[in-house]
Structures are given as structure tokens and as C-alpha cells.
Length: 87
Image 1 (tube, helix red, strand yellow):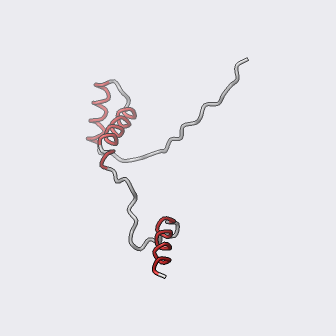
Image 2 (tube, rainbow, N blue to C red):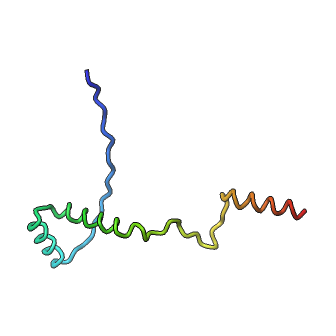
Image 3 (cartoon, one colour):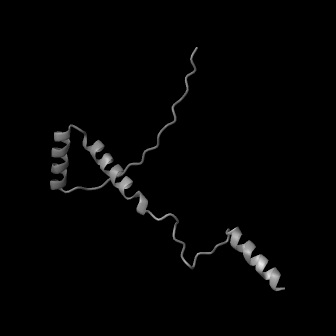
């Protein structure tokens, strides 16, 4: 007897934006010509755009000078070693 495994649900987020009438008509014409839904066309355009500019994204988050570094163990350890050598 086969076991029924539940599929892992994929989480989606809702995203809304406004288009002008001209933009909407262009999207409708494009989708009709290519025989795709507007949703699929917009998703593929976003996916291509993200893939194109993925290399230019910053690697690390910028931390301002005013940000405390409470949990940076490496820096604390280095400062501790330096203070011991000075004594």
C-alpha cells in the first residue's frame, strides 16, 4: 500500500503595482501575440531582470559607523590579545 506523502507547500507573496493604460494595452497585445498569460509574461520578465543584475548586488549588508558590534567575537578576541601583550 503506497504511503501518501504530503507535498511541501511553496510560499508565495502577493505583489501589487499599478500600470498606465498604455502599458496595460502593450502587455495585452504582447501576450496575445506570444500566447502567454500576462502573469507568466511579467514573472518571466522579472526573473530575467533579476538574473541579469544578480552579479551587481552587494555581497554584504552595509553597517553604519554608529552600529554597535556586540556579537563580533573575532574583533573582541583580537582586542583582548593586543591588550594582554601591552601589559
